[in-house]
Amino acid sequence: MIPEGFRSGYVALIGKPNVGKSTLLNILIGQKLSIVTSKAQTTRHRVLGILTDDTTQVIFLDTPGIMCPNTRLDRSMMQKVRESVADADLIIYMTDARSVEPDLKSLETITDQPAILALNKADLVRQEQMIPLADAYTSLRSFEAVIPISALKGINLDALMGEVRAFLPAGPPFYPSEMLSEHPERFFVAEIIREKVFEKFRQEIPYSSTVTISSFIERTDGKDLIEAEIIVERPSQKGIMIGAKGQALKVVGISARRDIEVFLEREVYLKLFVRVRKDWRNQDRFLRSYGYK
Image 1: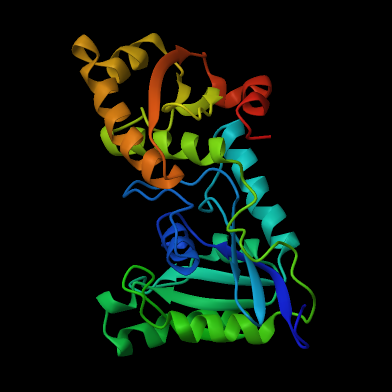
Image 2: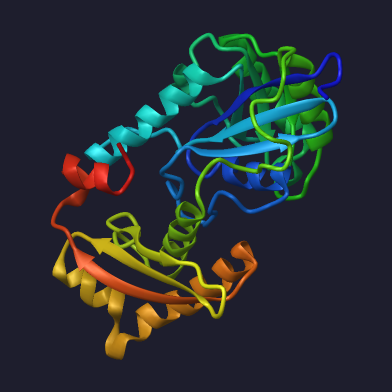
């Protein structure tokens, strides 16, 4: 039975790359749903995470970092950001507390939607240093609240969630209380593998690659079988991805398998293949096939 006064709604996490949106989602949900690396533009999809308690259900939308698009993939990612803003009851607009001035381009994206300004990484800067940045943002538009936080350290997240819960409209939950996301397991498996590619390789390799699950067989009498393809754009990238005697790909596979088993809470047998799809980031048929459109 839904208690009287229950609140529910969609909250989009918006901001530049590497401001901590995915880290915040994972901490609030209590499980790693969005992959996190030190590289910019790790998040490519709109990742939905559901937080339900006795009085509220918050559906978070983690989004790609706002940037100037150079490829059709980039444009598709920015479309996901715009859709998330349009769907949201509330925006958590995140910025790095160490910034010296507002990011006008990303601020334009949230238009006139109700928003909370979250100054993330506040543990890395003195409080008085954040005041000019907060004042600069609030001079450009109104915010429901301005809150310094540290997503990584869990600082001030109770205050942030208090503001979120107070703002959400009254209404029943959209999802069962036990659900954490609506994405299928194979989506998260592909993302875990892609995270390991980002961690292992440098320069253009991570940004020129994606991961698709070609086979996902659950077994009752043994390890699940997962076959995945890592897609790259050029034969030279394939050679780097595989490495001498397959060692580079093996490192990715071992690391990915460990995290996949933790996420699925069962053992898996993971087989990785590398495929070349020339200029896939600018080909609509590939983008649709890989879930970007």
